[in-house]
Image 1 (cartoon, one colour):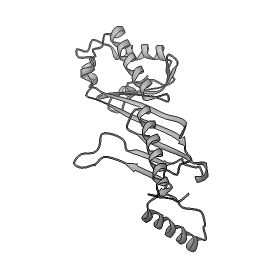
Image 2 (cartoon, one colour):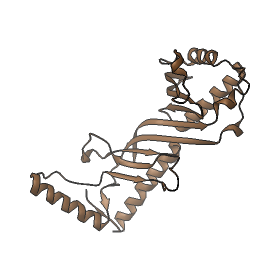
Image 3 (tube, one colour):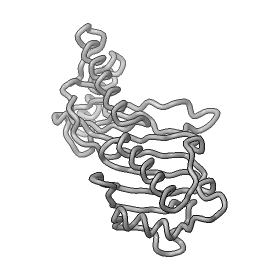
Image 4 (tube, helix red, strand yellow):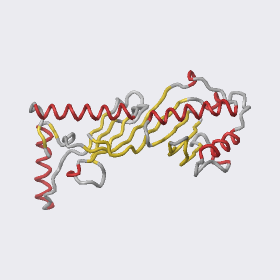
Length: 231
């Protein structure tokens, strides 16, 4: 597996923003002004309607040190920060930004205030292992039938292959609080390019490790004849 690009490294700290300013002594517009000055955001809240925490108070395209912040959003129940470096860097920046706001503007914060931390990792990669093209016989049979039908109905001999693998937790009795784990062919690329997109609700490093382990498992299964390749 060869990493192509990190598209999104998102961290969400679930914390009630009222708790960050329990007595209303910190002036939010002053914090916004200082944050914009410190990070150089290209887009930031300027009108009253921009400060709706139900929709998210949004800051776009800034920098924290030498790391570009794609987006920072403040909701009434959490803080979201996106980079394209890693979730580890996103988490570091969000913690440092909170510490800066504590020391500069007197907001209140304790790690115990965070009810949970969420992650979204999006990336693209190349692999020569047919991680979606390998299939158990029933799927191989379905691929062959679809190919034959496509050829007979539309005179289209374009090869068919599995293109998406999605794994998620049970949506019952409550909706999952995280994204699905997905591997799919990269949009607008041919099968021969062996390029894939993946999203996971895990830290970036863990996401990459899971993909590498899956690639090894598929390769081992092919070697032992447990699955066949449709590539």
